[in-house]
Image 1 (tube, rainbow, N blue to C red):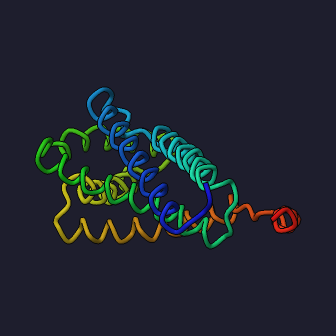
Image 2: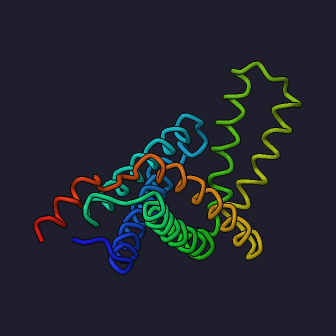
Length: 191
């Protein structure tokens, strides 16, 4: 398939929807099957690694779908569109899920997160007053995630877009693949 603006946008949007759905399914399954994992720093790191692997897989899939070659600009555009669609889908459905399906989610998860963070910080040798302060700050952030106001939702969405753009810049630099110059010269001679 030849790279065109239309099919790059279409394929990036499609991959973004798939990534968003995968992220939602993983999050909801963990919430119901093993909510105690949500308080684990190891689980947080593992989730980040899995997310990066999912993005790598779908970035390579996107590059393959559009012909195997793309410039940095094309890669950035495709990867950012994919990440934006995934992030938007995830954020909107997550907001609806935690506000309408599971409005008590914050209370359920807060206990697990507080216990997990407390245990981790104690193992690191922190004093109890420092632990209490760190947990208090973390709980404020967690409340914004599970019980956001409309303003907090858009603030979080804006931050997510910035993170997605930076991630897209890095991925575009890594996964760009220019078509070899001699390949296009051979194609021109054959025509």
